[in-house]
Image (cartoon, rainbow, N blue to C red; front, side, top):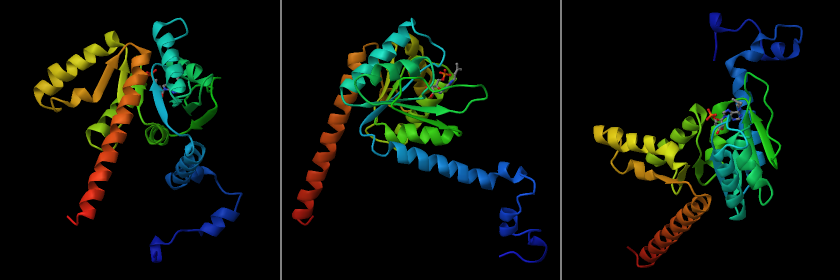
Length: 250
Ligand SMILES: CC(C)=CCNc1ncnc2c1ncn2[C@@H]1O[C@H](COP(=O)(O)O)[C@@H](O)[C@H]1O
């Protein structure tokens, strides 16, 4: 309820119907909420029936010919052949390589981001969506994939890695393997986790074990499928135990 001086100078109807007015309001936060909502609706709608999927992250800057590009392509192919859709940021570099590998044998998805410079989704996609908001896009990666594979990359890649790691560490997502590909690139980070973060007591000693580390695309697929199989088995065991307890009246 609004009274007296709190009353606005015009009504919602007036502002809707008066097309001659200023359009500054288009850029105000209440309107943005609807755009944000629209991005969620579009993303949820397009991805709802995707099936099992793995997100592949890595540098936008590495080009064909780089060993990491080649590795990402092989990872994408392996995941697709194992029945996983591959989701990337839809851009160039490692993202493009992951999509390219997946495209022939499975579903290839790109969740792009609007950037200050012109940027197109790569051409190896079955489903491509461009987001305005980073946080909406990040929700899609987490919601629609069951594992993250992280190849060498810069700040964008680290942001995606640390978000998933925090969600797993705090129990917000479970049965969610995170695989780092590129032992030479990632080992210094793992050493820092153990030698500094765990040693200083700012993470638990076993937190670094939340990450798998490998150079082998086949092992990436094996680690993910085994983690999912193991997680599924544990869920079934728990359900059976609960059913038995219920039957016994305990
Ligand atoms: C050439 C160039 C800089 C293009 C940027 N174009 C991009 N298009 C889509 N996703 C991106 C882009 N840049 C960063 N990202 C996101 O951040 C990660 C890569 O960032 P970086 O290059 O490691 O830090 C990707 O996994 C992706 O999800």
